[in-house]
Length: 351
Image 1: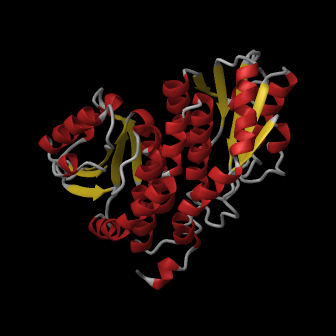
Image 2: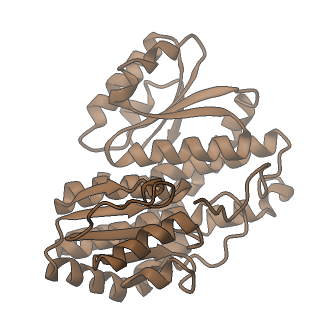
């Protein structure tokens, strides 16, 4: 490992993720239980999530986890309805959840403030429990990530996923789900061992100008988050897709040598993702497959093996790690500042 890279904030924060998730699972059980009780007491059936950027990708995960496992209808807010157009939908009977590492984006604060005005149940996931957004939450869940110094969010993203997963497990009341969640920090530690393979991958693709990242279901969020990290850290045009959407037109992008990152963990979608790998290889794409299954990895151009399988609903917590590492190493290979990419700031205040 290059000492210069190992000394960066981003490298450190990526490798802090197991400890952050362990801390969150220990310290957030009480507020998450409080939120679960409130959801039950108010007979909440639908959730509206306000978020931006990386946190919006965590919201995509929540759509699947809370929908599949807890039968809640989850939608993503369009904050400009509340701000630019100064209108608001009726929020009675909803849980309105704000997700923001900083808790400082005015548009997200506005959505939560309007929800409180209407008497809706509000909750906040944030890394700053003294923020403007936290002040609007009936329940506030601390991401427990500590200060995140790199501009690109990594440890706060997986903390958001862990908090959402903890809420799902608490709502279900299933001890099996909680026990699976407690195995996540060790699984993330194992995923970090993909670093050397990913570093070689970054050297191989150092001149990559465009790519796609494809996932589906719980890992639809992973596709978006990996694409975002590659865009903001390496300035590469990388587009995220679900496997279903990709076949409805974007497949035409594929030509010999086109890089396609496919997220294919064990689970209900494995057969579909395997078929997609075969389709891409038939069109001579460079398929970079991230999976915990040797049979799928053997079909790819490049295999990134995630060592410890998790239940599919928890797999985004490990499947995103090689993508974070790829963005880190590719930026470094290109001589870019991994802690402070151009044009963006740690806190973005949108309205």
